[in-house]
Image 1 (cartoon, helix red, strand yellow):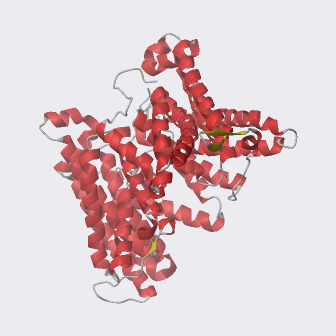
Image 2 (cartoon, helix red, strand yellow):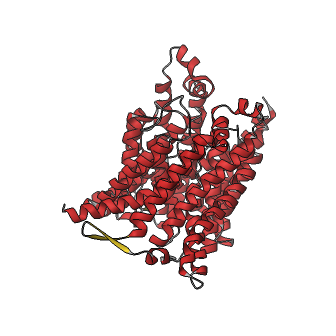
Image 3 (spheres, chains in turn green, orange):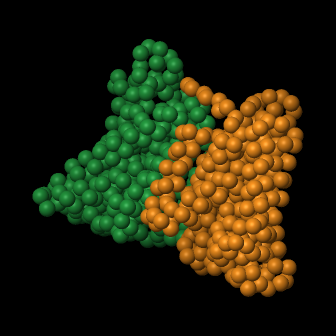
Length: 299
Length: 317
């Protein structure tokens, strides 16, 4: 394998890992606080992508640069509206019920969202690559690449990681979320509204999934099924890292992103296989994930 | 005998009679009926695991293995016999169940579900990407097999298949019901209610769960063979995670309290899909999703629960 391909694979892996991180950290956050694995998380990713593409195409005639805020607006709207409705009306009634029922509620939401997505946006691929075109290409050790993918995406992922850490560990709202996660009863006793914490956490997690989708939308064509594949992948990352591990999710996303990118260049048949293989091996050796510990803080 | 139980028995008897009579009056429904019964057999396996409180979100792997056992036989060996398929499919899935089971029974709840998902996704990606051997996403066509050496016309074969599937479904449900009522079945349920106590009795919870897991893998493979023969194709979709979700969906829809729930759930699921697909081709998935939410919110012990009217324990945090 020559060095050009190695660099190319590294850059591919880096930009891909940034997107996967955003989605899986949302999944992990929701699980850490609500103890629910959100099967519809991939649908939120897909809706983020479609909403961002629709909005981008709408604002491009005004000014192409408006597409950048459009990506952000689309993901927040999707996360807050869909995530909020889902938590309030579907998840809240089933907290404390059997785990399988909670899981299946999100599976039902996945079925509904997947279907609605086809009805709203159709099955034809949608392209909205304006943001990628606006930013210049850069050359990394002789390999030309879009700076959107190798600079902006990793930068935003890093910002999210730092921001989320800061929010959870150094702000009052973060402390409230941690308190509810540690001991819901005690937190409620001192006057914390646990329901609101759940709602807000779910909205944040959903927005992160949608943000991953929105940022992915300029780099790829949007097709039905993009969310179906993403859910298991983000699931693999979150589980490999240890559910609820935020920094762990970043490291694991990088590991899985790079492994997948190298697989594409070396042995394309194994592209899809690699993440799940890593997940199986890690979970067999460390059931709580690479960074998971029992009985430590959950997020 | 409680009134709920007689009601369930009545429903079972009526359903069996309907399944026997239906193909005569409506031949075009035989394939649908075969699919319902075959999927019901797979869901029986999910119900076995639900007794232990464990949800596998990867059981489509055993379903897929059963189907691909048939498909590979046709592709690499040649014409086959249905009786042979009914042996090799379940044997393959049972062996895989034992192997995977040895690993996954060490885990519980979300980790159990996740590890199953991971294994099934490994199988799915192999089926999807090993194009030379599996035809990738297009899948492998399955030719109509003989039965005990006898050739059938496509019309006659439909009847053969539906009645054979019905017989297997009845045997499988009786077997599962018996298993769940045996000491082994009670121990399986004890894993859900109190695993520590079970261990105190000197019973290995892992071994109890492993037996249940292998049984469910066997049922998965059996259903996979029947569906592949009925639909005359095996595709990677058979092993995809949405398929696993569908099986868990059907188990909850029917109700996990009784083996019959698997078939009641499968019947409603396939009918809704069939009619919704005919009338509202673009919205069948949406309708099923709404049905699922309604069931979980208002009838969490499934259709069987409606018949038995057991009070549902409400647990509030």
